[in-house]
Image (cartoon, rainbow, N blue to C red):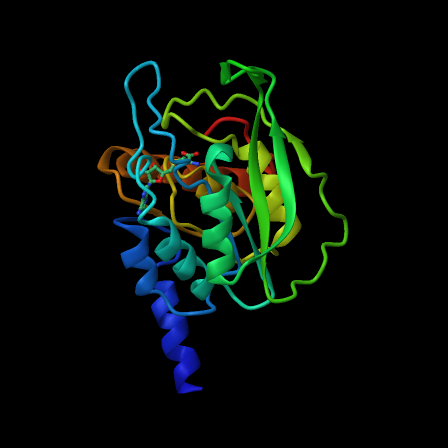
Length: 240
Ligand SMILES: C[S@@+](CC[C@H](N)C(=O)[O-])C[C@H]1O[C@@H](n2cnc3c(N)ncnc32)[C@H](O)[C@@H]1O
């Protein structure tokens, strides 16, 4: 009984917050088996830079990958899932890190875009994520399709900003109202915004000060919006 109450208190100090820091260090302070769903979009290891010069921390070296996946696995509850985007050119490194941590791949999701992110050998029009299990999670009653349309987010807050509409359906499928969703590579807090808009709790971790500030301000707007929505009964907004 004493252990449970300590665990609850420890977790609640992280809940519904965007934390500024290195997710490996932050997750090490979190209790094991305390998170209901990990939904994250780590750096793709491609040294990304957008047209305006914005870049992403840790997008060159993969030193962080294995320790981060070990911690994500540890904090996730038994018999739960994680969804993690990844860079397809480095699939071998991501796969090794997930398997070493203990995750079992149980699905693969293609996010179809109506525009090309670049054109070379192909016109590149999708992003991708693995569905990863810890233990034996129960099957969802109505599984979502593993091809999901991904509208353009506008990338105003972050160069690889994900649209909330695409993330919200995954959160609804794999969690219940009140569950806690962790995004250790939160960027502009798209997963956290999607969690809050669907009635879940969130923990976001972001090491870049500029994106952290954007995420905190965004979550303030989302909290206000949710308060208004509870009064008006409105649905998920496409932009927040
Ligand atoms: C691909 S972006 C995520 C973008 C996010 N999905 C969004 O919609 O805004 C990955 C983010 O992880 C952050 N990051 C990289 N290494 C990190 C670490 N060790 N701890 C916390 N954040 C990290 C980067 O600064 C970057 O913002």
